[in-house]
Length: 242
Image 1 (cartoon, rainbow, N blue to C red):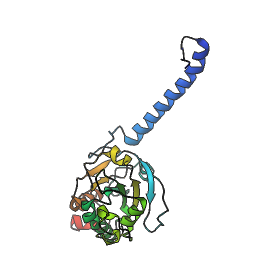
Image 2 (tube, rainbow, N blue to C red):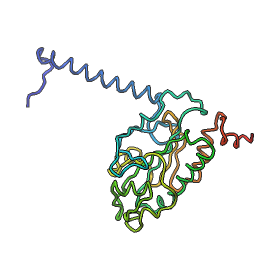
Image 3 (cartoon, rainbow, N blue to C red):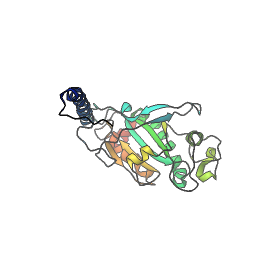
Image 4 (cartoon, rainbow, N blue to C red):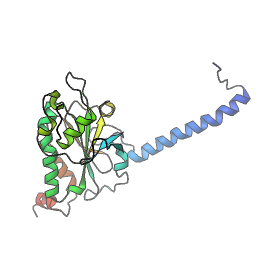
């Protein structure tokens, strides 16, 4: 294999512009990341910038085969003003359709969405549910199983292949489901297990990071964020006692 010898002028003339171009791209990428995150460390802890990801997504009501490319950062507002009365907050859940805890807590997501609708703030929240496949015996999933869990459709593979997905607690889930059966996003975020819940501010900064089985707290934490600067809606009026 021919090695590039920098001391040879001809080769150096060809190598140097290319090297400068590559370095320039790297610097530009670094600047974009720095601008987007305001210098905040990427991670899932409170105050960190949620890592970007791209995956195949499915919306409720679509056919099982209707999957589309979804990138997290395209659905955030990197220029958010910091005014909590504005912008869309993001709830992220990592789940495994064969996980008993995810099954038992499935009704709470649809219940939370119903309350947001009742309080008139459903447009202030988007749901992203990332379906993973934990390396545990009996946790074998598929895109058909993901959709069945999302929409409560007949499918016998949920809960470790022991229950029909149509019988899970709660109603069909809002928002997008992301296919992460490869666990790439799961490994990037590194939550301790499933279910795992997070709330992102409109610009992607983590406003709250929960642990397993703590969805009871997410409504309180979400309310605290939405109503931090007040707000002309029924939810914030109730919090302020108006």
